[in-house]
Image 1 (spheres, rainbow, N blue to C red):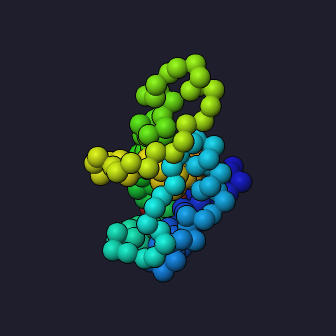
Image 2 (cartoon, rainbow, N blue to C red):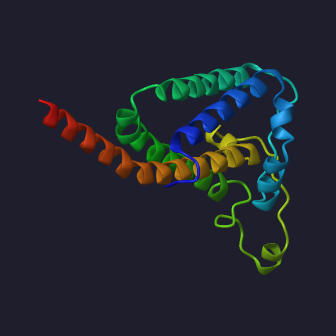
Length: 188
């Protein structure tokens, strides 16, 4: 049996999304200044995010999307356990893990300081490359930063943990359903 139940994990990530929605809406600089964002960004040599000094329209939209996600995930926990664990979250957790993993990979691998696509001279490989602050060529260039990487990394870890926990809980739920069907069959 898992140390923390899948319901607790899903509730926690939902409340995390609601908390982020609040900060994106009212105090976005607080998110950018978090130690986890700085440590992960520096360790992966990812550029900082600009434009978090004051709330703006894009951050308000992000806040609304995170709030909808958090509220809908919390509401989905009110479904019957058999349905939510076996079907809904049984498909959502691996999907969210996979998509988060893709974004973590993309934001690091195809960024301006990528170890795979940079010039590979012996002198430049031993020193850190400075962060590039040139204007982005497309919207996807905004996906290469420490904030997105940190958020998706946390999402990836939590959804993997939830997926594994759901797999552990699945057998006990199936056993409970089997016993309930046996009782119903004997009562008729």
